[in-house]
Amino acid sequence: MAAATAMRRRGGGGGMDDDKMVFETTEGVEAITSFDAMGIKDDLLRGIYQYGFEKPSAIQQRAVMPIIKGRDVIAQAQSGTGKTSMIALTVCQTVDTSSREVQALILSPTRELATQTEKVILAIGDFINIQAHACVGGKSVGEDIRKLEHGVHVVSGTPGRVCDMIKRKTLRTRAIKLLVLDESDEMLSRGFKDQIYDVYRYLPPDLQVCCPGSCFLFD
Ligand SMILES: Nc1ncnc2c1ncn2[C@@H]1O[C@H](COP(=O)(O)OP(=O)(O)OP(=O)(O)O)[C@@H](O)[C@H]1O
Image (cartoon, rainbow, N blue to C red):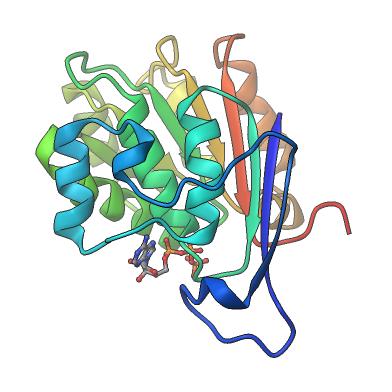
């Protein structure tokens, strides 16, 4: 398990202003200050630059490599510091797009966050032809079934709908190797614990788990 935490110093500014941040990381976690040095697939790198990113943000510098290397990771940083983009980038790097099976599953506490994550994955992963689907409550079940049966690499969803799709056997879990529990504290505080556990029971045993969040789990 690797952990990376980025916190703004008191009185610090917002956004990607890394100079005003303090960091705590597990021993051995290094900051990699360029996307080029991360060993990212060429076409994905192209997508990242085309999306407008020039260098990784503080949390990306510390958490992308451990995730890409297959470690279980807890990455905590305040809102707006690049966690959603980090999920998109690492998921795109992890999946093998030559196989149309779901290989990464992202669970989020809200429909908006799940949909936003899907959008960033599709944008950054444009040149690797990534297929992602947002599986969220309030949207047509028929459309979920159609998309999932057609075959996608990544599902970004809310626990209830994802659980439903798994139980219907529309979302096949056997090839899932990465589970991202985005804002897991918020998911737990919204009462999703049983549904998350239900989903987890269907996932392969040698699963990699990542928990990006803005709450300070250990405080
Ligand atoms: N490496 C980067 N370089 C430039 N901009 C970036 C980088 N990473 C993320 N951003 C931009 O910063 C903003 C916040 O990023 P993102 O949504 O990934 O952060 P977040 O921590 O998930 O925020 P929130 O909790 O508000 O969703 C977005 O506009 C995103 O495009």
